[in-house]
Amino acid sequence: MNFQRPDSVRVADALGDISQLPKDMQMAVSNRLEGSFQPVPEPRDGDWLKQQQERGQTMKSFERKAFKAIPHGTYKTIFIQPIGSFDHPRAAKLNVILEFARIFFAGCEVELLPGVDFSPSMKSRDNGGVLQYLTRNIHTYIAQTRHLRDTKRELLCVAVTMADIYPDENWNFVYGEARSSEGVGVYSFARLDPLFYHSTPKEILQTPLNEEHRIIMLRRCIKILLHEVGHLFGLSHCIYYTCLMNGANNEREMDRQPLLLCPVCLHKLYSSLRFDVRQLYESFADLCDKYGLETERAWYQHRLKCLD
View (cartoon, helix red, strand yellow):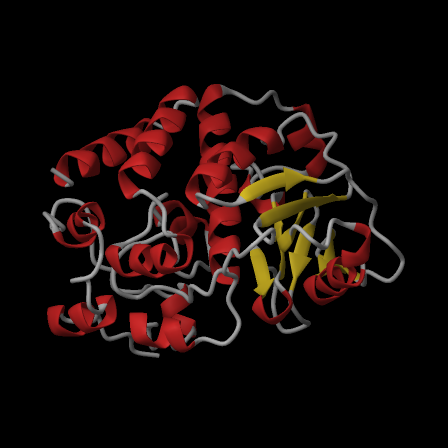
């Protein structure tokens, strides 16, 4: 498939009318964009846009989307459901990842649920010695157990797991998958370890987690969670800039995704959450500084200057 990079006219149309936005938001999506947001690179063999035809989601099409989460009343909690064991010496800490989610989805509560085991109803397969679970059955489990959670607070529920996952028999794997119509999703940490493609499971367990790998895994885990929850808020894959909401088929694409929303996607999320973009950027920069995400800290601090 031949991807056609959107020109400036098409990008402006996707962004939509910003005249009624607060001043800070207007500046966030329009001021000094060239130094902050990069165009989507030409897809290479194996890349998402080489295999998937993405038309791009404009602000207008986002507003018409039937299934998207919008906090209202008491319904503003994003529940995170761990499935399977997280007793892994190289696993990123869930409580740290959730700190980023609480800031990113401003106005929502993010709550970690007690872990549960995989059930017999969750179909699995052996894929070259790697045990994988079918995403569809995990979605069904999350939907069917909603009554066990606080239904007066639940906006979304997303499962997380250290096990590998796949969406159907035609796919080798998937990093995560959301089902917007039911407000559920699942994502996996399995392939986020830099050693995954280079070592056996036993070797991975026996290898200490150094600082370089800690940063890589933390960054990847945050991206996957925010990306999948972004889908549940109605954001489709982005083709307008290099953005958190770009599709990814491989490690290279996943690592290229920045931990930020482009102007088009930021406008969409703002329309649902109505956050203070200056406060969001300041808090996110502080958290990046706290956990050693230097590239992201510098970007958010730079964009704060662009709001003035």
